[in-house]
Image (cartoon, rainbow, N blue to C red):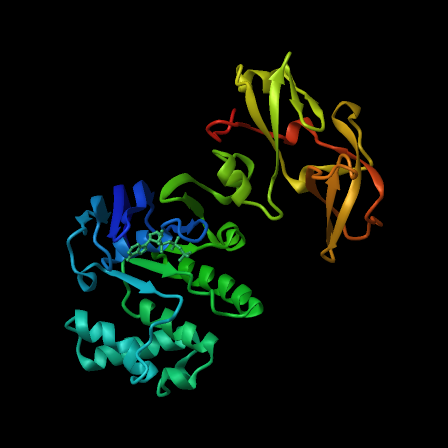
Length: 367
Ligand code: ATP
């Protein structure tokens, strides 16, 4: 068990076209026994970060510590980490037993009997004992994924490194494995970094989440902190489904003036804005009140452009002026039982206690 510490870690790749800064000065402390999810869009540097921790990629600058040990220059097999890949990366010619035993044979001086016992115990814990004599080609995707996890667990590493391990499973199995993985991690108490591009997975699984964009760490916090207090516009737009709506506004005479509507500010908002002239107003779809509004100042007459039924709720796309050639639209969620149809004229309230404000120039949240 150990704490994992990244200090000013940078990775620069060089290719024919020049340099790519894949990971840019990332500092991150993962507590002992913590489940940290590293999340961000494709190409933001998640896998590279994980691969540097595993030792599969060198570090251009910065340090990585596991427990008290600096591990930058250690070989992957000497790092006391176990990685689980999206592709599972099982050896096709070996049985499940062979796959699970391989790491222990290579990196420990355990006897064959001890290894066999450990493999059997882990297989039982993972519910794959009846698969031990099969080869990966004879297993379903879900079973292979379990074996890949079992192979990491059997090594009893100080940290698990998981790179989108559930990405190849169908939606139902993925949801089931999410819960199982969380329970397993809690029982085993092994420090875990879990990489995904899926914000729902990040929100539901992580003790904390770390959000990366363009190689730069944007925010580290509990899922709810990142949802309620996003550090910047990128995080605000990335966390939450459907995404937060954004409106570009100008500060004029203490209120915000936008293309289609003006917004009255509270004293608290004005203090947060502190004279910033170009402001982005953000509001989550689930925070918009459609009809049943109770604050006239922040209520606007809008038209429903499109309705996306989702069963328990509907996403309604709203527009201020449906005749506009390029209408500014935004999304609100309403209950699934509500009768809403494209073309309906409705009232939409943007409650002042639910708005988020960002500096339009830097994207930083204004608190
Ligand atoms: P995805 O979710 O698509 O896997 P990611 O967030 O894991 O993306 P990385 O695979 O870490 O992103 O890649 C980060 C950046 O580094 C990308 O611009 C990628 O093209 C680049 N990159 C990754 N590996 C190499 C390499 N070996 N050589 C050159 N560039 C690379």
